[in-house]
Amino acid sequence: MDKVTITAAKGLVLLLLLATGHAISCPPCSCEPLEELWGWAVNCSSMGLKEVPPLFPNIRILQMQNNSLTTVLPGALDGLTNVKEMDFSNNPWHCDCSILYLKRWMEDISQASLDKVICATPAALKTRSLSQIHGSELDGCRKPLRIKCLDFMLRDLFLICAAIITLIFALCILLCSGLSCLSV
Ligand SMILES: *[C@@H]1O[C@H](CO)[C@@H](O)[C@H](O)[C@H]1NC(C)=O
Ligand SMILES: *[C@@H]1O[C@H](CO)[C@@H](O)[C@H](O)[C@H]1NC(C)=O
Image (cartoon, rainbow, N blue to C red):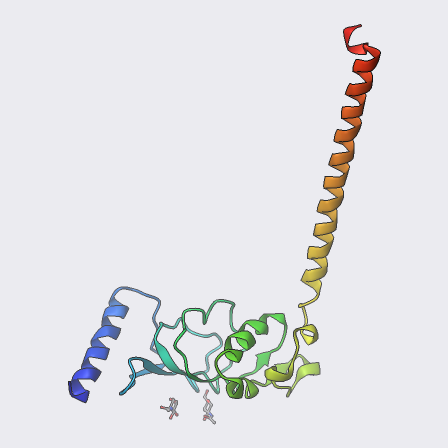
């Protein structure tokens, strides 16, 4: 197969994917089939994007730089298992606990790309690279844990109370039958 045929075949596959209504949005991004690899280069850079648009699997190169992204919703990149190269730099990232999703996703693929993800807010983390920030420094990462802990304690307390009440009942029944108060 010559290059033109391969490119045409890839274009057809994309059209089919689009036709099946699978969450795909090339526009406003540009999608180019890669010549040698079976996959796509998706360029979403400099689009003024505030959110990561729905993306399709089999993307190998993903460019998201120079947008207005502040966070990535958990799960938004889950389907993208073939990404080898990416750029999420030059966005006003808000580094709170929810940014951990992006950090973990990128860490597995490219540490160098993660180095270029710089926090814009909050002020305490401004200009810090996401690669050097630990979960404990991020707002909102600890609080839910405490609530969970409290929930856990309340549940334990409830279970202990239930056990004690059951025990008292059992004792009462035992005592009652011993004193034959049930046959009175
Ligand atoms: C990606 O898109 C931007 C904006 O349209 C453009 O300036 C840039 O050259 C493109 N990059 C590549 C590698 O095609
Ligand atoms: C960043 O994107 C804006 C449009 O959102 C564009 O005007 C600007 O030239 C871009 N800068 C770079 C360095 O690509």
